[in-house]
Length: 71
Image 1: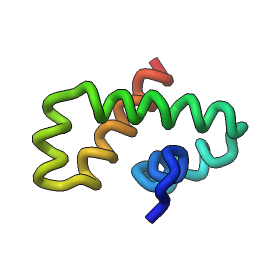
Image 2: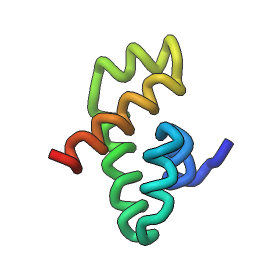
Image 3: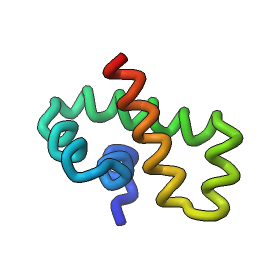
């Protein structure tokens, strides 16, 4: 399992998004990974989900970040 924020963020994405984000410049990946980490830290719902399933919480946070970027 990756330990750097970008690697962890990419691992939390579904395969299609992982490929799309993986093709972006490293700066963009780092920006999205930082937003993802802030989402994980700030949302209390994700804290609860993280206790039940850390990978599901990470995937949900990644989905939210990408949804905000698209909107």
